[in-house]
Amino acid sequence: MKTNPMAKILLAASFAAKKHAGQKRKDGFEPYINHPLEVASILANIGEVTDEDILAAAILHDTLEDTETTEEEIKETFGEKVCNYVIEVSDDKTLKESERKRLQIERAHLLSPGAKQIKLADKISNIKDIMNSSPKNWSKQKKIDYIEWAKSVVERLRGTNEKLENYFDEVFQLAQRKIK
Ligand code: ZN
Image (cartoon, rainbow, N blue to C red; front, side, top):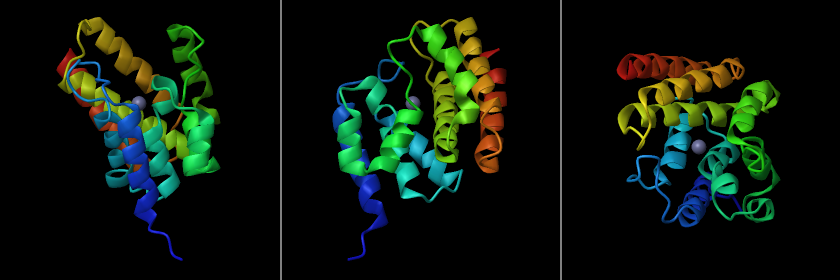
Protein backbone atom coordinates (compact mmCIF):
# COMPACT_ATOMS: atom_id res chain seq x y z
CA MET A 1 0.00 0.00 0.00
CA LYS A 2 1.36 3.39 -0.96
CA THR A 3 1.09 5.88 1.88
CA ASN A 4 0.07 9.43 1.21
CA PRO A 5 3.10 11.67 2.00
CA MET A 6 0.73 14.33 3.31
CA ALA A 7 -0.68 11.98 5.94
CA LYS A 8 2.14 12.37 8.49
CA ILE A 9 2.25 16.14 8.04
CA LEU A 10 -1.49 16.50 8.54
CA LEU A 11 -1.36 14.24 11.58
CA ALA A 12 1.42 16.43 13.00
CA ALA A 13 -0.69 19.57 12.42
CA SER A 14 -3.66 18.04 14.19
CA PHE A 15 -1.50 16.64 17.03
CA ALA A 16 0.33 19.96 17.61
CA ALA A 17 -2.90 21.98 17.45
CA LYS A 18 -4.35 19.87 20.28
CA LYS A 19 -1.13 20.05 22.34
CA HIS A 20 -0.83 23.83 21.99
CA ALA A 21 -4.58 24.40 22.55
CA GLY A 22 -5.19 27.56 24.60
CA GLN A 23 -1.57 28.79 24.28
CA LYS A 24 -0.87 32.19 22.75
CA ARG A 25 2.18 33.72 21.09
CA LYS A 26 4.14 36.45 22.84
CA ASP A 27 1.72 39.16 21.73
CA GLY A 28 -0.90 37.48 23.94
CA PHE A 29 -3.36 37.29 21.06
CA GLU A 30 -2.24 35.01 18.25
CA PRO A 31 -2.87 31.26 18.76
CA TYR A 32 0.44 29.47 19.39
CA ILE A 33 -0.11 26.89 16.64
CA ASN A 34 0.28 29.62 14.00
CA HIS A 35 4.01 29.63 14.78
CA PRO A 36 4.92 25.94 14.16
CA LEU A 37 2.70 25.97 11.07
CA GLU A 38 4.56 29.02 9.79
CA VAL A 39 7.91 27.34 10.46
CA ALA A 40 6.85 24.32 8.35
CA SER A 41 5.48 26.60 5.64
CA ILE A 42 8.76 28.57 5.46
CA LEU A 43 10.66 25.29 5.08
CA ALA A 44 8.39 24.04 2.29
CA ASN A 45 7.72 27.27 0.41
CA ILE A 46 11.01 29.14 0.80
CA GLY A 47 13.50 26.39 1.64
CA GLU A 48 11.88 24.00 -0.87
CA VAL A 49 12.11 21.20 1.70
CA THR A 50 10.05 18.16 0.66
CA ASP A 51 11.10 15.64 3.33
CA GLU A 52 7.96 14.69 5.27
CA ASP A 53 9.90 13.91 8.46
CA ILE A 54 11.51 17.36 8.52
CA LEU A 55 8.17 19.06 7.83
CA ALA A 56 6.32 17.01 10.46
CA ALA A 57 9.11 17.69 13.00
CA ALA A 58 8.88 21.42 12.20
CA ILE A 59 5.20 21.40 13.14
CA LEU A 60 6.01 19.49 16.33
CA HIS A 61 9.18 21.44 17.18
CA ASP A 62 7.86 23.19 20.29
CA THR A 63 5.70 20.38 21.70
CA LEU A 64 8.41 18.88 23.94
CA GLU A 65 9.51 22.25 25.25
CA ASP A 66 6.16 23.96 25.70
CA THR A 67 3.51 21.25 26.19
CA GLU A 68 3.04 18.02 28.15
CA THR A 69 4.13 15.90 25.16
CA THR A 70 6.68 13.14 25.81
CA GLU A 71 9.45 11.83 23.55
CA GLU A 72 7.81 8.38 23.61
CA GLU A 73 4.54 9.81 22.34
CA ILE A 74 6.26 11.49 19.39
CA LYS A 75 8.32 8.40 18.61
CA GLU A 76 5.28 6.12 18.68
CA THR A 77 3.12 8.40 16.58
CA PHE A 78 5.64 9.80 14.09
CA GLY A 79 8.67 7.52 14.21
CA GLU A 80 12.21 7.81 15.46
CA LYS A 81 13.48 10.24 12.81
CA VAL A 82 10.84 12.87 13.57
CA CYS A 83 11.34 12.36 17.30
CA ASN A 84 15.10 12.88 17.01
CA TYR A 85 14.65 16.13 15.06
CA VAL A 86 12.30 17.47 17.73
CA ILE A 87 14.73 16.48 20.51
CA GLU A 88 17.58 18.16 18.62
CA VAL A 89 15.79 21.50 18.40
CA SER A 90 14.45 21.46 21.99
CA ASP A 91 16.22 23.31 24.83
CA ASP A 92 16.84 21.66 28.18
CA LYS A 93 14.21 23.40 30.29
CA THR A 94 15.96 22.61 33.56
CA LEU A 95 18.61 25.21 32.60
CA LYS A 96 18.36 28.97 33.06
CA GLU A 97 17.26 30.96 30.00
CA SER A 98 20.66 32.65 29.60
CA GLU A 99 22.38 29.26 29.67
CA ARG A 100 19.92 27.81 27.14
CA LYS A 101 20.57 30.73 24.82
CA ARG A 102 24.32 30.33 25.13
CA LEU A 103 24.07 26.59 24.41
CA GLN A 104 21.99 27.20 21.27
CA ILE A 105 24.87 29.21 19.83
CA GLU A 106 27.49 26.78 21.05
CA ARG A 107 25.76 23.65 19.72
CA ALA A 108 24.15 24.90 16.50
CA HIS A 109 26.91 23.52 14.28
CA LEU A 110 26.46 20.04 15.79
CA LEU A 111 22.84 19.66 14.64
CA SER A 112 21.84 17.33 11.78
CA PRO A 113 21.07 19.06 8.45
CA GLY A 114 17.31 18.56 9.02
CA ALA A 115 17.43 20.08 12.51
CA LYS A 116 19.55 22.99 11.25
CA GLN A 117 16.88 23.88 8.71
CA ILE A 118 14.09 23.67 11.30
CA LYS A 119 16.06 25.91 13.66
CA LEU A 120 16.73 28.40 10.87
CA ALA A 121 13.03 28.59 9.92
CA ASP A 122 12.14 28.90 13.63
CA LYS A 123 14.40 31.93 13.99
CA ILE A 124 12.94 33.49 10.83
CA SER A 125 9.39 33.05 12.18
CA ASN A 126 10.32 34.49 15.60
CA ILE A 127 12.02 37.56 14.12
CA LYS A 128 9.01 38.18 11.85
CA ASP A 129 6.72 38.01 14.89
CA ILE A 130 8.85 40.41 16.91
CA MET A 131 8.93 42.81 13.99
CA ASN A 132 5.23 42.61 13.05
CA SER A 133 3.24 41.93 16.20
CA SER A 134 5.39 43.34 18.97
CA PRO A 135 5.47 41.06 22.04
CA LYS A 136 3.85 42.55 25.14
CA ASN A 137 6.28 44.40 27.44
CA TRP A 138 9.31 44.02 25.17
CA SER A 139 11.53 47.10 25.10
CA LYS A 140 13.32 48.13 21.93
CA GLN A 141 16.59 46.88 23.46
CA LYS A 142 15.08 43.48 24.25
CA LYS A 143 13.96 43.13 20.62
CA ILE A 144 17.40 44.15 19.34
CA ASP A 145 19.09 41.70 21.72
CA TYR A 146 16.79 38.90 20.52
CA ILE A 147 17.41 39.41 16.82
CA GLU A 148 21.17 39.74 17.39
CA TRP A 149 21.17 36.50 19.39
CA ALA A 150 19.12 34.73 16.68
CA LYS A 151 21.69 35.87 14.14
CA SER A 152 24.53 34.42 16.24
CA VAL A 153 22.74 31.05 16.24
CA VAL A 154 22.09 31.22 12.49
CA GLU A 155 25.71 32.13 11.73
CA ARG A 156 26.62 28.68 13.05
CA LEU A 157 23.93 26.87 11.02
CA ARG A 158 24.97 28.08 7.60
CA GLY A 159 25.83 25.82 4.69
CA THR A 160 22.65 23.71 4.76
CA ASN A 161 19.99 25.56 2.78
CA GLU A 162 20.99 28.65 0.83
CA LYS A 163 17.44 29.82 0.11
CA LEU A 164 16.53 29.79 3.80
CA GLU A 165 19.80 31.47 4.72
CA ASN A 166 19.25 34.26 2.21
CA TYR A 167 15.69 34.70 3.42
CA PHE A 168 16.94 34.93 7.01
CA ASP A 169 19.31 37.73 5.96
CA GLU A 170 16.45 39.63 4.29
CA VAL A 171 14.16 39.29 7.30
CA PHE A 172 16.98 40.19 9.70
CA GLN A 173 17.85 43.37 7.80
CA LEU A 174 14.21 44.38 7.57
CA ALA A 175 13.74 43.79 11.31
CA GLN A 176 16.85 45.82 12.12
CA ARG A 177 15.52 48.76 10.12
CA LYS A 178 12.04 48.50 11.59
CA ILE A 179 13.10 48.19 15.21
CA LYS A 180 15.72 50.96 15.19
ZN1 ZN B 1 9.57 27.75 17.75
